[in-house]
Length: 106
Image 1 (cartoon, one colour):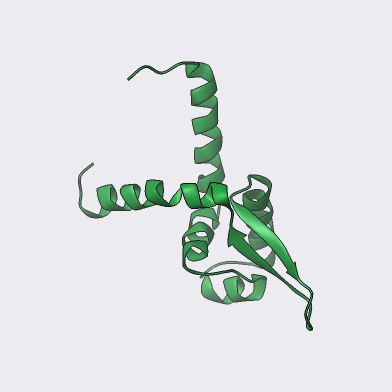
Image 2: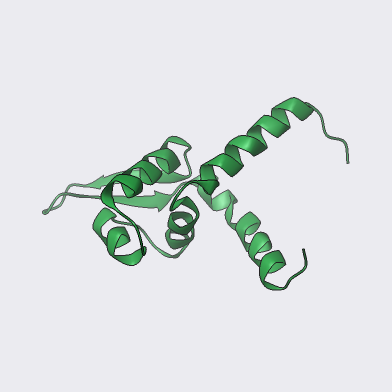
């Protein structure tokens, strides 16, 4: 296997790891695999989550195009978050990581 642009690859990997090492982000991603997400539901579902850390995590995942933010205009107006196409591409990676960690293959 030939790897080109090693510095670019390293930088991309560092950005990815930094994004998912932040508070709540990996847990939000795993919940987004199962269904759409709403802010208050996440506050209740994620132990130790607070409004500020959750808002920052959602903003960062949206900015990285892992989540897609959709405003639902029916009454009452609300916002839902879904995995974007880029986010869906990460599912096999997380499944493989889980397999490695759970089965002790590391």
